[in-house]
Length: 424
Image 1 (cartoon, rainbow, N blue to C red):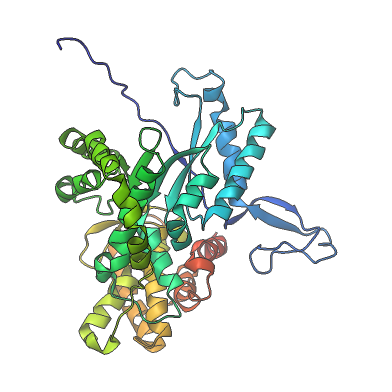
Image 2: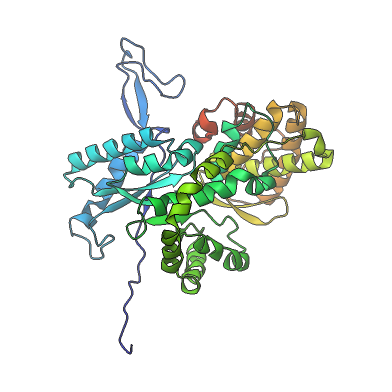
C-alpha cells in the first residue's frame, strides 16, 4: 500500500516451569504429617516428624519465583515490556489429565493472591505429552480455559509416556518405528482438531514439537514447515539460529489461511474423534520380537545406551541439563530429560519382556562407556566412566534402566537428582 509496517523486534518470553510431580530440597517444610507423594524416605511419620524437614513440590516453588520475578514487568517498572496484555506466560509440562489442570489453576490463583496479582494474570501453556492428557485434551482445555494460551504436542515426552504406559502389555517397537505407528499421527492431528473445535484459533496458539538435530539446519529448513501446514501456529526449536530460520516458514505458509480452512471443515473434526481415539489407544507393540535380527536388537540397545550415558555424564557429573550430545556417529543431537526418558524406558521395556538380557545390557553399557569417555575426553572436569564403572554417573545409568519399570511414569528426575547430590 506504500505505507510503513513496524514489527516488534523482541520475542514474548514464555517461562517453562517443571511438572507437578517433582520435589526440591531448595525449600523444605517441617514433616508434621506423612508426606503423601514425597520421594521414598523423605516423608515424616503420621504423628509428627521429630523435627525432620522434607522437600516441597518444585512446581510450587517454580510458580512463586517465576511470578515474583515478573512483578517488575507487570507493575510497569521495566523499560521493555514482555506482555502487552499484562500477563505472565508459564508453560506446564507433564500434566496427566484435567484433574492436574485443576490443581495448577488453583496453585496459580494462590500465587496471585500472595503477590497481589489480579486473578488470571498467570496464563497456562498446556503441553500435551502424556496419554491421559491427550485422550482428555478437551477437558484439560476446559479446566484451564480462563488461563489457556496454547496447547502443544511434545512428541519426545509423549513417546516416553507411551512406552511406560504400555510397559506391561508387551515389547514396544524399535524407536524408529514410533512415528510410523497409528498413535503418532492421530495424536498430532487430534491436538490440532481440539484447538479448532474449541475455538482456540485467534485466541491462543497451537504448537508442535522440538527439532532435535541442532546442527542440521538445512534439514530443519526443508522439513519443519510441514508443522505449519498441519495447523500449527508455533513450534519448538533448539536455538536462536533455529528460531530465525524457522521464522522463514511463516513467510512461506499462511497459518491463518490454513486454520481458516480447518474451521470450514469443523464438522469433520467431530466425525473423526472416535477414529483418532482408537488410533491413540493402539499400543506401539512389537508383534513378533523374533522378527528382529540379533544385529538389529543390538544396534537399538547400543544407540539407547550411548545416548543415555552421554546425557547422564553431563547431568550428574557437571550439572548440565539440555545440551548437544554426540550420538554413535558423532552427530550432535539435542538431549534432555525427555530423550533420556525414552532411552531408559525403551531398554527397561525390552529387558522386562526378554528381548534383551541383563548381562547384555551391562556389557553394552561398558562398551558404550568407552565411546562416551572418548567423546568427552579433554572436557573440563570430566570424570571417565571406565574402567572403574563405580561413579555416581554409572550408578545413575544403572538405576534409570534397571529401576525404570518401577519409576513413576518413567520419569528420570528423582534418579538424576539423587546421584547429582552424591556427585556434589
